[in-house]
Length: 401
Ligand SMILES: *Cc1c(COP(=O)(O)O)cnc(C)c1O
Image 1 (cartoon, rainbow, N blue to C red):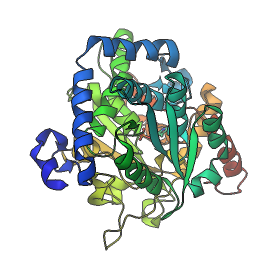
Image 2 (cartoon, helix red, strand yellow):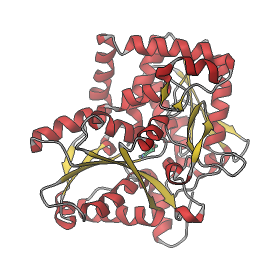
Image 3 (cartoon, rainbow, N blue to C red):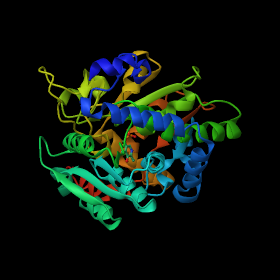
Image 4 (tube, protein in one colour):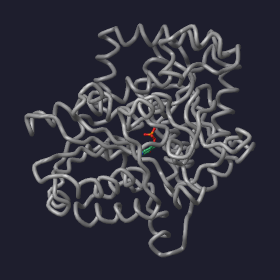
């Protein structure tokens, strides 16, 4: 309900964000917010969160100066290696935070939505670690496309529920997860996988992902005794990017760039560039930029990377876009795949296709920078999960997803 959301000004980023959700969930969101605010002020909670990030996830992740890339493109290119986290991407940072909060609130079960399956795998992992019952909602179309991740979730003890409605993909799985949560919130915690959803989710996800820039800033200062000139990350729902930007937002001299997926090109209509081609609208409990048709119906997104294939973007990004603190650009499937191949061959790192979008723009941007300038690119995940897509793309067999 819009009215109630608006009374809580802190639930908005300018005109974006809010709690556009059924009355049945208002009290649950209020309890969640109270518990979250309480937890992040509790040193014991934070200690436990950092304990698991270090001992289980394997943080801190390196800030690696990519020597050959720097030489080739003409400025210092640092990679924040989120690909080295347990489960292969940044998503686990957020899952550990939310699941510890769930435990603190006395919940026994967790649910999650997933598209490509990456957030589902991270959630199933956390649920196994903390002995919680776990159900993951996934569109039936995605279940077919992402068989390996379905197997992983099941191996980890989670139940995967197929959602057959709408386009049978992430958007529909999210709707189903929200509906289920409204019925079961008494004993169930809903773990959202990106910086989206009703307040307080975008705030929580930022809080649990900001470790990326807390570390990166410290590491960069140690290595270079100054701030970076440019910081970049890819943007799906916006969680690795908000985590990568968080500690630099106040440093006005640092240029921040978010890279969306342009798919086959923004003018083709087959893309996921919500900021470049979307309009403000309401989806999944929030107001933000959304891909929609003339009648306001949410349009299907397209990207070769399943993790960027979302028709919206987190509300804080919408605000950072309008206030021009962050510049949002977009990169096509083809450009991302070329960048992926370059990183493999020049640095011996196979990146996720999502992360390759940030890399592709980094290579373009580097050409306009000076030799002593430096950028940090968030390498949000590793590419093992994408092996089949990469193979079929370079064999000219087109897309697997
Ligand atoms: C899920 C995913 C993304 C996109 O999600 P954000 O919330 O925008 O970070 C990017 N990279 C990888 C490796 C992912 O798994």
